[in-house]
Length: 260
Image 1: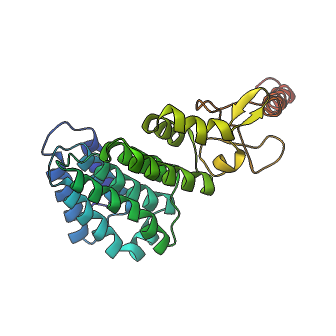
Image 2: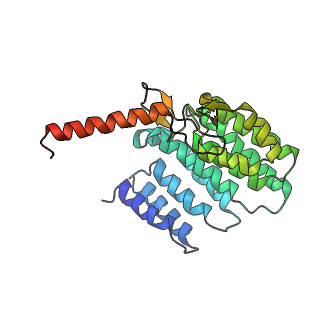
Image 3: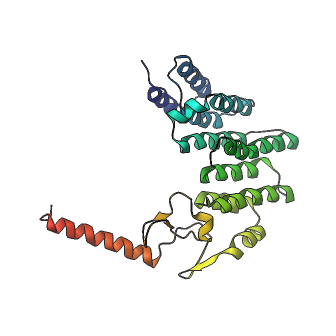
C-alpha cells in the first residue's frame, strides 16, 4: 500500500517538471492519497502549491484557495502527520502562488493581495507563527501585485515591521524589502536604524533573533550572528574565536585517539 512518503516523492518529481499538465498530475496524486485514506501531510500540500506556482493558468489562485481550504479542513489530522514548520511552509507556498498571479486589473490584484495578508490572521487563529519564509513571500507578493506608490510602500512597511517585531528578518526578507522599496525608504527604515558591530552596519539583533541560518553557540546559547544592511552575515571576533576553539578541540581529540 502506498504511503504518504511515496505520494510526496511523486509530487517532488513533479515540482521540477516543465510539463504544463504537471498540476493536473499533482492534483490527481493528491486526491488519490486522500481517497486512499493515506493522508497527505502538510508537505504534500506545499509541493502541490509549488507546482501550481509555476503554472500560467488563470485559475491557479482559485485552485490554491481550494487546496489550502482542504488542508485546513483536515488540520487536526495534519498536525499529527506534520511538523509545525511544514504547515507554515504550506501557507507560505500559498502566498507565493497568489503573488505569481497574472491578474489583469488593479482591482483584482488588490483583492488577491488582501487575501494573502489575511494569512497572518489565519495562522494566528490556528496557533501557528509565520516565519521568515512567510514574510519573504508576502513582500514578494506585494511587489508583484501592487503598483508602485504610497499604498504599496505602506503595505511593504507593515509586513517588514511585523517581521522585525517577531524577529524573523533574514537575508531573504531583507533582500525582498530592499528590492521592493525605494532607496529613500530603505535608508530611512533600515540604514538609519542599523547598529555598529565591529565596524559593520548591522540590523538590530531583535530583528533577526528568530531567523533561521543566523544562530550561533558562541558566548553561550541564544545568540545570532549579525546581519549587515546589505544582507551579509557578519562573523564577529567572538564567533571566530569560538570556531577556533572547536577546531582545536577536534584536533586534540584526534591526537588522543592516535591520529585516527
